[in-house]
Image 1 (cartoon, one colour):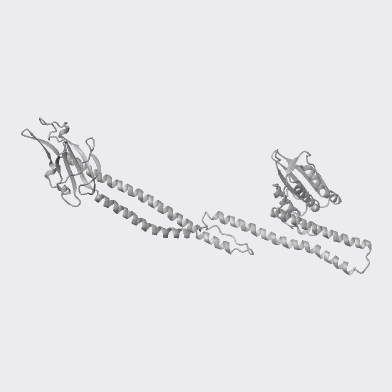
Image 2 (cartoon, one colour; image 1 turned 120 degrees about the horizontal axis):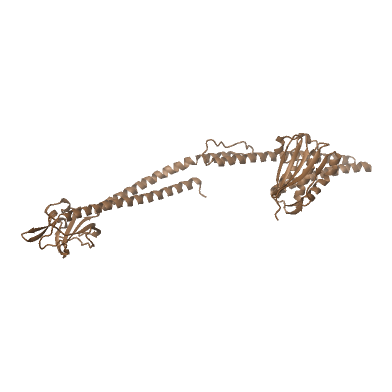
Length: 481
């Protein structure tokens, strides 16, 4: 693919050349029309002037037709390379007068109707291209009255007057103009190449700077941000999006580093415990263990294995969700049944910790969802609520239904969450420092809740509506009929 610089340069040059060509052609045609009109007007004026000098005279009863202009040696009609021509014919076609520039030859006769003037192209007697104007004229006396025996309305008394001129001067002028336009086009072309190339280069300089700065960004340091104050308006949205992207990448890299660190931390403890148990088992391999002692030993091993299995299963679920390999099979389910399955396993623990769990869900409310993923979401929410609610606290839940959607809310009391903690709740392995003492909590539950909610198209939000209360709200879209 061609570069933007090359594409813009060629496009601008082509467009400017086309515009110049069209403009030059239009201007040339306009100038040509003006010159031709002036040429024709000059011919018409001369022809009408000559026609006005045709007079009839009565000399002792003899009618004579005279052309006053034939009596003067007009320079334009004398023999010369740029001479002009005139010729007058009687109505019967005989020649009445001709200009000296014709040298005794005749102009080609032009046919026209009406009195004229009529303008036509012709080939002159000398072979040059020419243009002629012709009129019919009936001479009259000085008083404007007819003489006895002379009728000015009689077509036989009319004269055909034609004035012609070579088009060579006009053609030379038009050729000079055309050559001038062509020369100006060549000079303008070379100038345009330089101007357009420089303009495109200067115009793309900010983009080149952005490209260089982008190439210099390293994964080890994502602190760089693009300054948009001095950028052209067209590049401000691009740099703003790049800054947003860098923010997200930096945040993702930090989460990844924290994730790796926390995975190592979470797995190191159970692996160390298994290693210690294995060492103890090897050291006592030659001794005879009591049954109760061996039972306790293997219960510890089983508990550690289950803990590790839970952690690995949660990690695999997160990885599958991020990779898009989790299958989602939606169907209509009764929401009350799913919630009952989700809270059931945690009710005994809530009872032991003197935590009140209260809530009702309409038995006829259905939603379209994947029941296994929704069950995973609700179990993790109830698990978090029971484990992190202080002893003697309360957990309540309910459902708000409208025509467009259903909103499930779960509220529990707490003693240490703040507004600053809310954005971190769904990050893998994130826990408040005070919760680190809980060895059976890995900080993956809400991460799975967030990921499963995205897969199901659910909206989830958390809030602290008042001191000591934490609320999770899940919005279900309307179930299609």
